[in-house]
Image 1: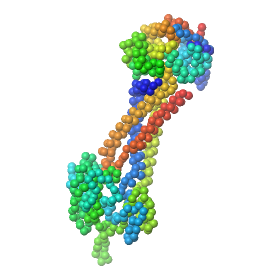
Image 2: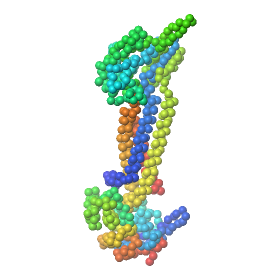
Image 3: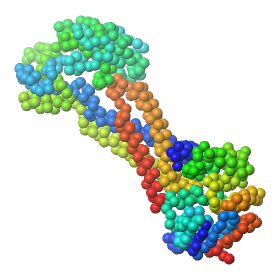
Image 4: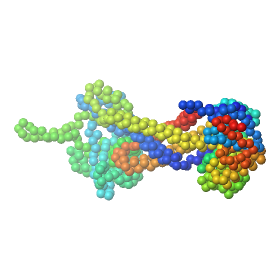
Length: 399
Length: 220
């Protein structure tokens, strides 16, 4: 029997009540599997990928003999040693961008060369009072649960729209207290490869020197005679900027060996993440087992249901292999139809979730990537299950 | 078709059931054979063996001198395709296929019939059954008698020498029963061998030989 004839026969018979029910049930199951798989890979990314993209993951905080901080620069893989002062941010009210009664705010950070952000529009910072901002820019506050500040995707500004725009900041530096300075946006960076909020802009150290407070904190103390005096907490620790996330452990060890206290700037709760990974993997495995179970039982029931039809084919002269091929092709076509519909549903749900529902993710550039490779493996697994189940049931009935 | 000392035993968990015992007969082309007997006498079992659908039996079975009892599934399938046409009581038409497509079904595996010839051949067979205006209808739109005649056309798709009919008129009224038996008789005159299992006494008017089975044996 030619493949064309086989296909013709299968296609003429494929639309019936039982098959439609199977397609509906299986489509729902596969769509859930795809979504679950996305979550599995998202959790894996949270452990292995996102920390690398978070700039703070390459920063160690060292505290000790301040006269020896320069020594830390000699440690292998260390790029810079700077005051932790530059880890602080300046908040700009950004009223220049106000729209629709939304609360505006821009976070201004210090730019270090090792950040190496890819400039998508305009240029990088060259002079004082210049900033680069995210290429998809949202200069508004995000208050989850607060209806007035609900994230509105329509208010995201494109990189090309913001070049040349300015906004004012007020200095917190004690030497320039409350003085106003104006920033000009000279370029936009690709924030999608970072975990920055969508209103995080960067400026030079020279600009931040004018804006950041010189002290960690303030306090008041009392003399024995009852009079009070101001205490100013100096920045007495340093940030050590490491070239790669993979080298942070090694550098931390080296800092410790030099007699400094050391801790990571970014704490990743690996136990929590491992638990999330385990849970989602477990759910996925359960879904695979359900999937195989459904395929197997459906094919078994279909075989019983088609007993008379198969006897008819046999009486017409169809041999066992030809009858098996008809069954197999029909099963694979049903699975294919289910997978195609599932993929469409999955992409629709993915788009809606990432663009409209998961606003927090949108705001923090937390990417929920489509795990293409994982989806492909999943699809191959499903096809294999269908083929193996068909073969197994066919072999059983031959006995 | 020559069968000699055919014995078929069904083994259940509790007992052995002898469906056929010491059955010997010769079926010739150009003749109409009626196999009759009460329920459970072995009629359908005999027909299954003759149609090479049942292979688990003892005895000798030859078609045109060739011993088919030792053949494998593929070889038996070829014999069924080339030599034998089946008509069933419940028609077993594929409801997803039109009438002429049902008739084409056996042709899909016959490499001797070219693809371009199939539809014409199927339509000619349907015309022969007097159902030209029904060829594009689905089985649901056909009466019982019409469905059975489409089955007959399907059985003739690969121009077999032998037609095996299992209660072909079991679900039909008198008028349609007569039509079906008449068609079967015509086939004998064309040189085919027709073997039909039936409860109906009407078949005696058409059959050349009556074979009566009782308790799995031919009764003379």
